[in-house]
Figure (cartoon, helix red, strand yellow):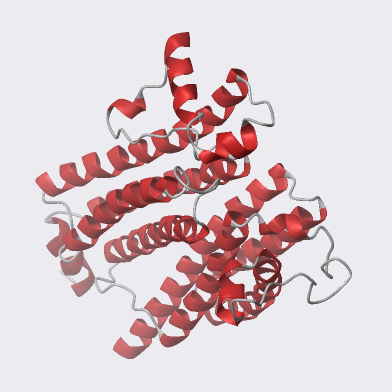
Length: 356
């Protein structure tokens, strides 16, 4: 028996099929997280996130079933600042409330579905002792991150229930970035397991350049979340200039530069708009580095950032058209997955070259 065959047998006892099955399961969960990010974007853009004012992890899966139930939920919503100061004076009806409630309910329901879709197969594979050595703790960590994401989601919602008419953009950023981090981890772990079944038992490592690319992309995603949380996309509908200027007027520096960077919608929009080109530069280099090893990953990275740039410009120039904005968030999630794929392949290439 050759060394490749021995490495596969030692993992599964008989064949390398189960690591592939676990990989496919993780990619399926990653797809659900992708859908969750899209629905989260719709929830944000339709101002639906505060429509459900209570957190009931079990009973909350059941929506209002009677007119009396709907009126009870609507009355709870009427107690929060968003209704008192914005939607109430605008003449919100029960039908309007049902619309925003639907999107928040779907968002939370998807969270429950993802939890079940991860937990049940995880227990099954664990009972069958099919999880390769070294991956049990990693999968446990992913399960814990999923639970933490639910808690952070509610923590985010609570920031808009008492004193302000919207959720904290800092908490929204944490919520979105954790979802994208989970997506990247799912993709990375699935790829490691696929490589395991192909005779590469050692997982890919994070290279120095891969870490730099990840940080550069992280900053862009952070400011994208700030743009969403501060409604900064509405401050300008022109491109490449913002309201006729490169650096727009109206930036509030009264609390210092650091405060402006994190809180001013004009400056946040400006940074998100132009840091994108820094991201593109690093992604081009990443794609070139892995092109010979994985042409598909290289093409995925180029395609994702190309479409994302065009969608970002279109979102701005259409005045935050909801379809464009949702597509922009969706492709952003695909860009995260493609980048994770590329950085993983770079790490596998580096480890392979070291071993050889």
